[in-house]
Image (cartoon, rainbow, N blue to C red):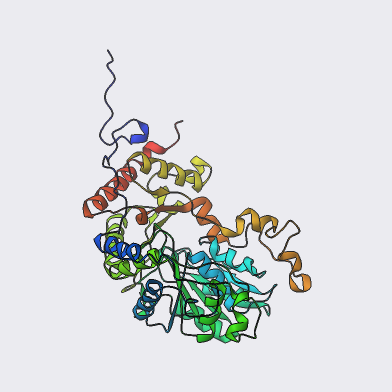
Amino acid sequence: MTNAMPPAASTLAMLGGEKHIRWQAPAYNPIGQEEAVAVNEVMQSGVLSGFVGASGEKFLGGPKVQDFEAAIAKYYGSRYAISVNSLTSGLICAVGALDVEPGDEIIVSPWTMCASATAIVFWGAIPIFADIELDTFNIDPVAIAAKITPRTKAIMVPSIFGLPAKLEAIVELAHEHGLRVIEDAAQAPGVKLNDKFVGTFGDIGGFSFNYHKHIHCGEGGVCITDSEYLAQRMRLIRNHAEAVVEDKGVTSLGNMVGFNFRLGELEAAIAEQQMHKLDGYVAQRWQQGVKLNRLLGKLPGLHPPALEPDQMHAFYMYGMRIDAEGLQSAGLAVNDFGSLGKIRDLLCEALRGEGVPGVCSRYVNVHMLPMYQKKIAFGTRGYPWQAHENGRAVDYTRGICPQAEVLNEQSYIGLSLCEYAFDDVHIDDIAAAFKKVWKSLDQLRPKP
């Protein structure tokens, strides 16, 4: 028998207290009866793919693919929509459609899914990383401007986590320099900036439909454009271009290397049904994100997502950051821990201990991945960097994107809203768990 006192209710769970959240986080699942009916129709038709890699009526795919593309084009007000089996494939199509040459440079954010940059390398072009804005996590137009050279061909712009990048300023900058713009809007479906859809500001926009996006069909994606030329090039790259160009009278053969990036009829049928639900899903996630902002906004040293008045956000992720000064005012001094990153990791451990689902302490700095640090991609001889026109050295060393690097290494805390079907009660409990941790910050201090 022991005389030890039970831990107080305010004791952090990681230190032996009771965790605040005891429910199991419900998985996000937007699939309903409508999708089941649509899939059954495809199954009964026996046509699981309508594509043929040859010129003719089946070059553009089956009826469900074409219906889905029409629905996307109508929703976004775009002239053309080109479905693909993933947005990774779509970005490869988009970069190739711009007629890039090996050695051309395309500016891209380091704080994005790696495919944004890999699609550039794929064509022998060179990713040039421009730093982000610390408050929005989006690529900074000022940093973009500083990276433009005579070799620059385009700008790849993610609207990361569902918050629109400064698209108007970036497009204006691109026009000044005769550059193309590809929007990687994978995480920002149905989001508007000044009453214009994200994905429609640039020359090409792209959206993802893999399993943890707002709407999904397992794997899939789509690119949209108002350019007939770009649409044709993307369709060719999607579907065995080299076998089709002659029959289609295409004489500009640059980048007419084709693939099977085609979307199946089942996926298209599911995705078309989900398009009808998109606005509702985005609105629900918006309400949850705004509520979290309100509930967490006064915690010292914690910065919730930055929102301008009347600004939309899809809240694919709920991205936050911490700052040393604010935490010190609450009793956690960086000098006691050695780095802000150690405090960040402790906070994440404490939040996970309280049962908060989907807490992450890292995202990615793409330029720090081994492929860029070693400049080895295709083969082992440094292509495309060693073949870079005029031999210009491209710098990927630590320090080229200080905002993104500090964010990832020291101050970022993310909450993965995309994986879960939270309701208001869940959001209230998550916020209460954050508040418990912040009220107990003294328990995290190193013992003398």
